[in-house]
Length: 284
Image 1 (cartoon, rainbow, N blue to C red):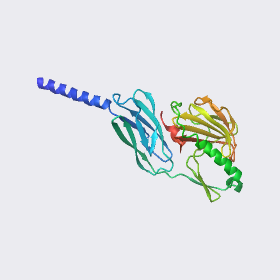
Image 2: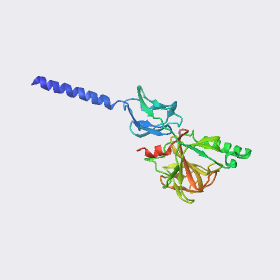
Image 3: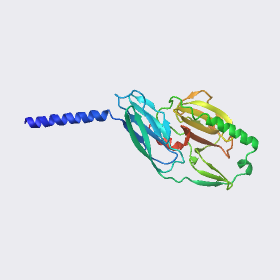
């Protein structure tokens, strides 16, 4: 009888020790665990509350990922996978105080569409003046992406227009048999004047008429995440304004280098162009 009581007590002590040890471990989760080039994945981290109070460090594909803290010792981040990433397993390194966790994300092979387009030469070959303008504007946009501001977005991301998608992310366009470009966004159908809404809360950091994008609005959602709305017929928000998810920020149009009214919508994350559809699928 005493032996049985002793065995039960010993088992309870062992289970308590194991449970306590597990609760203080560094726990890392990825959503999803498999992606394709151009996707986004979400990382959740629970750190040891007895370790350093500082946020853990995360590295993926040579980049340091900035995290946000939602609860005590709980950290999160959105992580981009560049479109030219080769298919294989990649390490995601998480370091917190004296703890280190290595998890892997699987990048699966994916064949993007190729589309051959024939356009008038003036639509393909730019004048020197147009080239100079396009270069200045590309530099203007490139200057936005490195800025990593505090998080503004909350919860899941929603589509910017309630219309069909006419062109998906990653399509390789071969124009007039020579010039090649990669479609780094989604094209939403829509007649001129169709409302365009913010995919999440953010600050308007650009409202400009650009050579290629026409009336272009850019939202900064924080932590290196930006959404881009092009070819608008009208802006419904101003630079410096903070907007909420679902708020109308513009109207579909055909300004810039567009053959007809539509919304070209893009997402930049830590300077990387990613597939907006991957962002919409995340359960945040």
